[in-house]
Length: 382
Image 1 (spheres, rainbow, N blue to C red):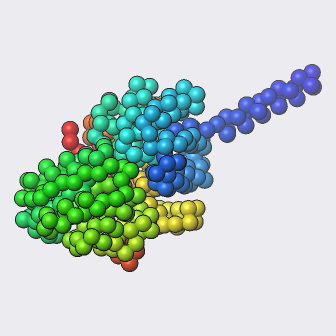
Image 2: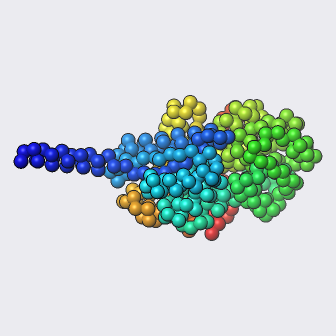
């Protein structure tokens, strides 16, 4: 009898321990290898800081969260099997993309079909949220980002300014370029010429030579930092001295490593002002990121940190990890403090409204210049 009692107590203890250590699984994919690996590393560190800080404060609804992390190599043909694995094998209740638009678009379809809430931390292509109502975006959509850049150029350099566009020919580049051209026309800006280039291009001599003849007032560049770095370096080496305004993905400390002095003076619409003191966790995040990574924080890291925090907050508000309840809580989000700017609201298809920060590279640092907060151009389309 005594042995049976001891066994029962031991079994109860194991069950209790198991429930106390039960974890909420959240899927996370990012490019850990390949040309986008630096962004993937930063994205992952940002997400892991959020996980750790949430767990240090007791987790979510009494449970710790676990990030189930996979390398998507920035390839859609990798993100689809990863999404299926996260759902079928890992049994995640939610997922976050720390990747670019291509892999995120592909994975969004899988999570939509499985009814798993999914946040695109910084992928900007509009199709990410068009599959249904289970995907949300933690950053401004591409078109509003482009419109914000047109407004910044018109306000700073005049509405009669002539602009040469240098556009990466992928989802990221094209979606931002579409918004820019639409708003540029409305504001009276003239796009003299648009040059496109691929993800793998590093030699831009022909583009630079042709752009010199454009005699534009401003150059607007859209691309990832690892392409943008060689691009602006060659633009400056080729003698083009016009102001350069760039898209969000130029916000990387690696830009300065690649472009060196050519990065000085570049304006970034959708960048991150490292000098801000709000929200309260912003400066502690910057310090913790540098401690872990060994370099200053990237905007993509802040986006991923905020997306994990937002997902956890939705679970707390839902009082549940049931995917449908979490999805509804996400949709009802109002005035959530993202590190890259306040999330005002989500519209009916998961697109957020948030102001756009504009930064400038000054003495090798990203310094805040202004904030664009104009509902007329930044409100997500219905």
